[in-house]
Image 1 (cartoon, one colour):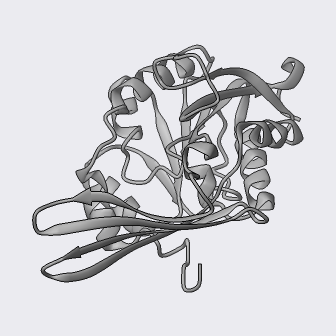
Image 2 (image 1 turned 45 degrees about the vertical axis):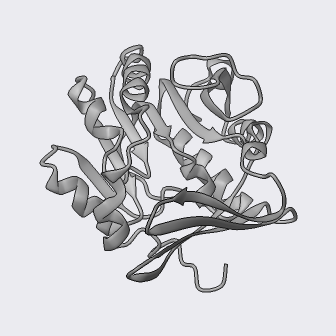
Length: 248
């Protein structure tokens, strides 16, 4: 998308309102992640793209020590204002190292797609693996791309109000697998844009990225309630060391 920069796409305005519309599955996500962390010796967790702490905060409330990596300094400022005792490194989740290891590394809410090339996504898996303990797992939650793609280009109403309308305008390049999306709100104050670009990847491609990093698929569900995975909507995928080999 011309003019789009992932480093600034989640700036102060976005960060300030990011928590205003929770998904509703935060508690279920925190419950399952806390259980997975509790199965490991260290019980420590690292969230890639921790954002404003939508998942990290309730996870700490369940007794898990959580660190984070986040590209947006504005999102980190909102998280820090919540008064949580978390260590957060500002930078690219595909390369930043914390110097620590964890029983659980996790990446949720389609954020793996924010890395706009296959190479960057592969590097993200490698970075996650580099932070994993011998008994650790890497959890990825994302949409199944077919749930997002009714066609290669489309515009559809996202929200209709008496005095405003929000449109979801998208175009998809099947060569790069990049979806350029803009949430356009039109109201009395004018027109407001919420651009985002994502590189979509099917679960099977993510599985191959895991194998490159020395990991393999351990479990896959259709959501945080351990629903059966159907190939539609979303998936929660759990990766562990291939053959129980531990870090290389």
